[in-house]
Image (cartoon, rainbow, N blue to C red):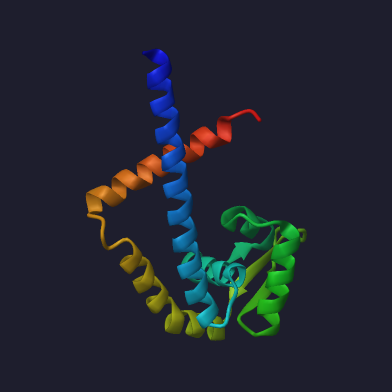
Length: 152
């Protein structure tokens, strides 16, 4: 009986993984297409969106917030700076720290493209009630925390 139950648990976990992975892939592809249609890649958009909504950020901390490497951040910040969408600002208190700051041009671009992006995200999750969205957030956090604690 225990073996049969363990097989059902394993089968259900595998099915959940496949459904979760396919769903994540579909959402990620849809969002990436939307971002590309605005003339950015996902990393560029993530940096601009962070600065647009959270204000100036230490360049060294941006990677932690959007989950990319420091080398990639430097490259992306350089590209966005060349496009005039952000600028670097030296920290007066600590010369080792440089902030990325969205420019007026960058803010204008985000004012134009972000509402469409936000609407797409709302559409993706429109099938869920607010209660279901809250539940899904809690469950995904639970899964993520568990995955981080596993020893490989």
